[in-house]
Length: 438
Ligand code: NDP
Picture 1 (tube, helix red, strand yellow):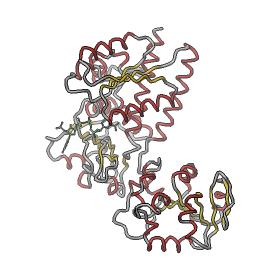
Picture 2 (spheres, helix red, strand yellow):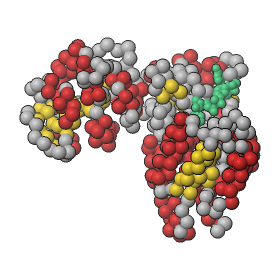
Picture 3 (cartoon, protein in one colour):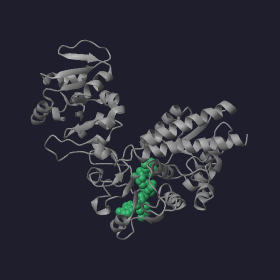
Picture 4 (cartoon, helix red, strand yellow):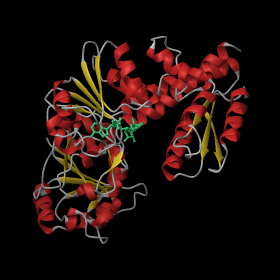
């Protein structure tokens, strides 16, 4: 029994810019012969564009309208496909809707993909983005990759985020029920930087999902430092606001250190206040302490996947106050042995090769290549970059390194979502601490 998903978005390519493999004759021919005599499952639109090119197959079309299509069984019942797949090979060709539909069954599926499907934008938006990450750019023939052979190597954040989310929602609801006060995060955005707006929107969206109020305060980038400080002090005093986040970067005329000092340490969801930073470095922390979001997210994700930190050699590349330094403190608290490295570090690749865990927070695409790694390592990719094609990627040469015996956090869908969820984790800590003083 072989069940496959051919990962491409057929509709996107057909008739557009000839990008997709369906327009490449040899691949289409190969697909035709591979599926010959088998059941092919697809969405209605896919059927319209390529399904009709596959004669003599048993076609099952997923459609909400259940409108009859000649030569095909039309259904919206996934069980029909799953039952069939118990006894015979079933091929599933999917766009976004079909991937979503079969997502709960990925563990049982052998996944295959076509070369060039990475070019398709729609697939990049999927949770199962690794199809695109494991690209077969140089591959000229139909290639089958088993999902399971990569699955265990990619430390996706989604399951960890989902589990944190449900715990956080349950705890929040309990406290709301008891105190009749809703948690609230205030975000200050100075100016209209595009990247900042994207991050702020993501934060608002997640807040909504968690049932947490997020107030976005947009200020002109001409605001004076004094006026910004006054605004923050106002929020410090506001009892309905439990956490304050100042979206970075700030305009050059504003001193970040002053701003970090102004946010009340009790509402410091980013954990940039020197008091909270000091508590972290002196080990004066407990379950109700604020810890910087990205490093905290890294630790939570590693713990989620059962990665033991005690006595491990960890190399962190980068020495920023946001990621690298607080992560080093957290690693030490977890009894790891830590090396902080940077652009002036000599023999960096050699140092990395000797480590058990590498954390890259550099901000350069493909920085971590084969010369940095050895089998059995865990690689945490914090970097957020754009590759030559303009797509989001991390610091790690993922497509090559994933073929090795390594575990890697992907970008996207790795540390980014962890950072976001830990922000709200911190907000709930501020909220709980405020309620306990109520
Ligand atoms: P910075 O961008 O402030 O600094 C980058 C660090 O990389 C510096 O310490 C620098 O060394 C080091 N570096 C640069 N080139 C080299 C080199 N050739 N060899 C060794 N080290 C080098 O760090 P951040 O921590 O702010 O950000 C790092 C990356 O992480 C960025 O891509 C950022 O977008 C991303 N990020 C992702 C987050 C997430 O949620 N996933 C959250 C925060 C950041 P030196 O100090 O000597 O200049």
